[in-house]
Structures are given as structure tokens and as C-alpha cells.
Length: 444
Image (cartoon, rainbow, N blue to C red; front, side, top):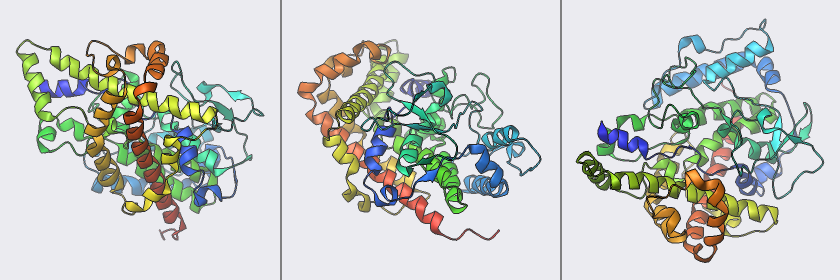
């Protein structure tokens, strides 16, 4: 139990992998024929899709739940009271609420009509949209998201819909869904398996992180770490994307596809696929034993360093991507995101792709990534266990960006490698969903 508590502390307080996903998705998909050549779609309010396809949505969600109960390890069965049941007489508001409950998304989820503009091609013709209309999570200092509103029926490029939605699950969809979270809905997820249940943003961690490849000993010592819901979200959103495309609701096809891909992309980040990429289990057990014997400094230091390195990697990647986008400049990260050559080196998209391909690759890359962060960032930020970067990110982010310039080559190469995986797995996932949508709907 003591080791489990220690392992829980290793997780960063913010369960975000790549900062803002949308600018990277614009680059990853902008030259993909299936996206670039797709016809413009008409923006559609969620309630219109729900009303038009209520019976099909009900059947789809029931089939997804049955599949999850049979195939997903550690799945928390959805309570039968949350089933989405077709009811033509209810109001649009009640239908929307029932849909969120059936997916077990936060009741605060916005799912508004919006776009996140490409920072490389800022749209100055549209007035900005207040972030609170799009996200239930207040913007942090230095947030890079910029939103504009869509009007019902407005023509919009699929690339913009897809790239915008790729960032959306971080807007509060998965907050406070567990039984030990404050003001939780009765969704049947049980107690939060890892992360701090008292910290709202931490409560989304089990939907955006997955430790599938830690090994038998780790899983025995910390069995709750095996309970994650990333695969569930990919299956839910992906299945809805296929249904939307097949039934003529192309806007929601691209939108749900982006929501699904967010969870795939999160697991390309080694700090989301490994509990502690910079430490072996033997070392974790050793420093924990020392702490129990009265010498906790090494244990606390490991916790701080893992968190710092996660934040430094994200800060470095986000700043570089955003700076290049605003300057309309291409560099190694943009080239890596667009690299289509890598796509065919992976197996075909399947239900096991997230676990067996994406997460396995990121877990294996963990030690190399952690070492690159240590070499590529100033020592104060990644090797000083007495320095908490997360608590000082707003003030020290610019200092990190300045100091890292002269020694960033190793880190840049590793981030480029990771973003090539981000792009390839995103494209493979999208192609897999599009292929499913081309299949004739099953006779029910």
C-alpha cells in the first residue's frame, strides 16, 4: 500500500500530454488527401444530430457497452439506468443530457459549435469566442487556444473541424466522474484509480493516461494503475464518428473523430504511458523503502523530477510549435508531424491498436525521452529535486525557452521523433475510422 501511495504521487497534477493538440493536428493532417480533399461540411448543433439519429445512437451506444464489457480489461460497467433510450417526446435539452449520461461524460461538457483557429492562418474576419463557451476548464496562464464561433449550417473545412476537436477532450469532458470526486455523477466508475481525487484536473488522468506495459510486478504492487479508460473513449467517440458519417452528418463525423484521436495522441507521450520513465521499478522500490526508514528525500526528489520533466517537455514542444506557426515557419517538428512515410510501418488500425502499438511504443521510448529532457534542458529545471517547475511555470516559462536554445538539439530530436509518432498514429486512426464508415451499416 505504501508503494502504491508513492506511485500515485509520481503523476503530475495536470493530466495533459501535449498542451494544445490543435496546432499539431493542423500540420499532421493538412496534406492528407482524405482530409485536404474532403468536401466542406455544414456545422450542425449536437441536438440536431441526436434528434435525427436517436434510435441509431441508442443502438450504437448499447453495442459499444456490450463490446467494452467483453473486451476491455478493468472496464467499469455502465449502470443500466444510464442507457440512452430513444424518446421522441422529450425535449432537446433532456435528450442532450441523456446522451452525456450514456457516454458518461461530465454534465458540464460544452460541445458547442466552434473552431480553434490555426495559429499559422489566423482568421481575423471572425470575432473571438469566449473560452468559457467552449471549455468547462478555465484557461491557464499562457494558454494558446483561440476560439471562434460557428453558425448552424455554415460551411466549414473538415480539417478545421478535425483539428479543433483533437484538443477538445481536455475541456472538461472527463472531470470529477469518479465516486470519490466532489459532486460526482453516479456513473459507476468507482473510486479514482490514480491521481489525486481531490484535484479536479487530476481526475481526468485515468481517461488520458494508460500504463499498459509496466509489467507483472508493478501491476501486482499497484493494481489500480491498470484501470484506465482511454480505450473506452476511443471506442465511444470513434463509433459515433462512423455512425455520423454513415447517416449523413459529416460535421459530427469529423468532430467525433477528432475527439477519439485526442486520446490516441495522449498515449504517444511517454509520460502518459509510463508511471516514471526515468526510473526503474527497482529504484522506485528502493527510494520508497528508504523513505519508510526515515530518509524520504530521494523519494520526494524522484516525484518532483518526474513532474518537472513532464512539464518541461510539454512547455518546450508547445512554445516551439506555436512560435513557428505564428511565423509561418517550418522546422523539424512540423516536418515530423507531416511525415507520411512512417504511417505504413505500423499494423492496420484495430481495436487493440491503442494498447498494443501506441502505448507500447511510448512506454519503450520513455527512458530515451527522459534522458533527452535531462540533456536538453537547463539543469535547474530537470535535475534539481528542490525546484518545482509546475508551481513556477508561468513565471519561468520564458526563462526556460531562452536558456534551452543553446542546448536543445538532443531534446528537439527526441520531440520530433515523438511527434512523428503522434502524426502517424493520428492518421492511421482516422483512416481506420473512415474505412469503417465506408462499410455498409450492419443490419439490425
